[in-house]
Image (cartoon, rainbow over all chains, first blue to last red; front, side):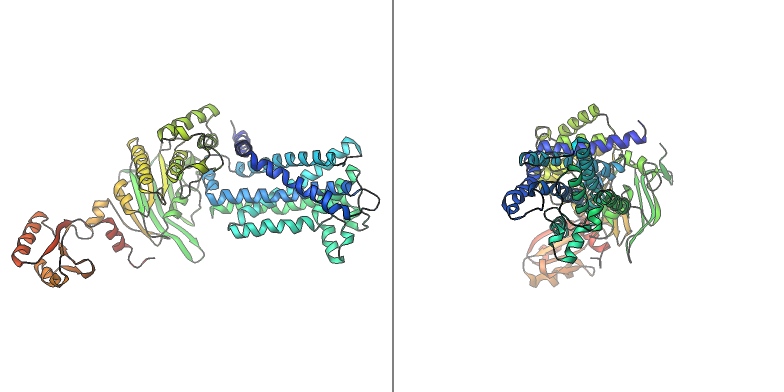
Length: 262
Length: 316
């Protein structure tokens, strides 16, 4: 086998490790999958009753937001797993083996994308069960799913970088908590138009908002009249933001990984 | 295989003038090492002396700022991958996937060492048998005892039957039984011809396992030799008297002559015993004649602990 085939084979071995985790510890997998479902039900049935979407049903509005938010929350899984391997010495063991060094990262990336697809599938099924649906046909629906995964893919790099950089458990905990305001400071749950001006502007430009708004557009779900430039160009931004995030964090991650040997 | 040679000797691990700086602090400051093939070499030193840094450089995990090192005939900086094909590393933490079973861990590391799936499975089975883990191969590692974890960790370092094995404090945190298990495993490996570099905080461990020992302090080699040779640097054997009554200490010291040393805390006086048994006989005879009540009289060899404290005095 040549170098590239080995790189793929090694990456797959690292990915399979994650899949083995699912079978070894199904409880954890199920808990991970049910968490976004719980948040969904919380907003759809407990809090959502008080939220009215002009010209539409709140659940129709909420679901694409939940999809996008799940993409962002996936970040936690990435940096926790990467950080654990570094502190436990597993990364060093990988680095002392004659394996392709790219596999440590590519294997993790593939594993996290698999988890994301699974989690998105569960959430979509729940969405359909609570009355949400994609109204613009299969092509647009797939495009929306593509944009969601594109955001998750970009955040992989941020997660890998954070996991390599942030070692102490307190900082990891702080980071896990910080993901929440990033998730909620967006149009995922409610329109930025309802927020104080400056907060609304931040929420409007949150990459999560662009992806959520683009997904609403493509799924044919109601948006929330918000006539800002960012809202008007959601699909373009949903393509551009992840590109920017990847362009920033992919090189940073590669550098942080190389710097493990410094 | 081209192994490095120096003075006609063949060395499997060689380091020349390794330097590794972290800011103003030098973790390695001109570190030299030469380990002949098929031996166990101990690296001893206080915490922060640079032992782990040396191991990390030799296993290609860390790039040195200066100096060169060759392992199994390959330069660690230039031919990292070739070095990695020939080494096993067992670090300070048990670097295992806690959620996976012992067998799954070994299979994964085997696949990543580029064994075919079948070969990786077979090798995992062999290693589990060899380290007495056959019955626990399917249990998740998080349910293993400390000793079992360490043995599995050691097994993971041996997947490719590497000619060179690096053990960084392999028994830290183990109980005496776990430690004995690891020692037995290391002895068996050496019997098979593996070259082992061992860092340890336990001098008894170096004494038990290592053919030669390098004492490291502040990133540099400060002494090198077999444990016996190192002990001799402290002046060889000593005769020691433990008196019953501390008041007798000066009289006992006088009996041992001008080079006697007194330790009131342990009611002990000691002096060099170049003639061993002859000295002991004379001391026993003199003691009886003097009427000093002694609890113990013996010839004692300096321990590696004393050598270590002597060589690294003033360090952390």
